[in-house]
Image 1 (cartoon, rainbow, N blue to C red):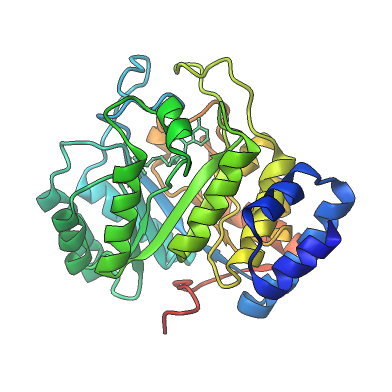
Image 2 (tube, protein in one colour):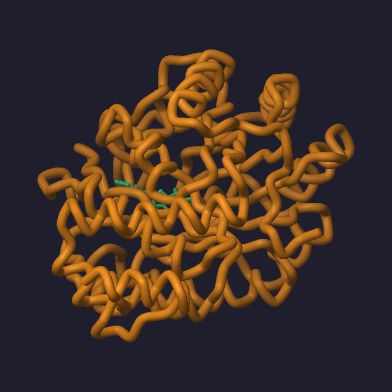
Length: 347
Ligand code: SAH
């Protein structure tokens, strides 16, 4: 198996059968070997820097009904909220003073936020903080909407593909949503010129190794700037309440593989990873990740943006979260940097 890791390290490529073999035969010794290589590649590309993104969860209203997600339309126990533009700008102000140079606006697909409203928010942020990057993570929109957001100043977009296997996609989503549309959105975003992030949940219900192999091949083909992966974690208000969570171990293994597949990719150690294990995010960094996304949402709404159960940091001030994260990163020999943290290809 080590030869497969060596091959991936040298060529950034494996065949579908080889990916499958690697994933199915993983063990702790092999993982350590993979993580060593992944760290070497990460350090070659980004040194020991950890980029931070300030996550602003600005609405938990959603018209979609994804079976895994805690803010799905049918979860009537979710307490819904929206932030005003002023509240969003206040998050940015707090974040800027803390050293954040990227703001990620994430939310459900909320019709209240028309294109004009989103454009106004993007423009206001860019006017006040011209040295900062704005990332959107607001789901599937038309080409024209994506283009209008880009023209208003948004330069990055996160849209996880969730799974690259159409049949699996159908088991995670209602009929109204399709893998084809999701993929089309990602191609449109790339075409417009965004730095694009795709990604998937590890251990989502009905996922097989073959699904994971398809995810890896799709990622390689799309060649995104960012890849967000984290373990699936059940939420009690969803149809998947009783499903098993994904594991730390498999998530880390895939983080390592993705680092070797796309050496300069921006790879977050996600909040979900930090939720299933107290050292999840440190372990993510040590497996090849180079980004963390602390929460900048106002404390008053933190407990309401629950995509899954037991989400961490819902009771903390942004400053405390960041301060602890900085110490944790220093503890493993890495350091949080004040920077937009663009992909290496962007100069
Ligand atoms: N509406 C936006 C943002 C979705 S939330 C969009 O469609 O892109 C961001 C990500 O959280 C999702 O893409 C999904 O991969 C992840 N997520 C949702 N529910 C989850 C769960 N139960 N466990 C782990 N991750 C989850």
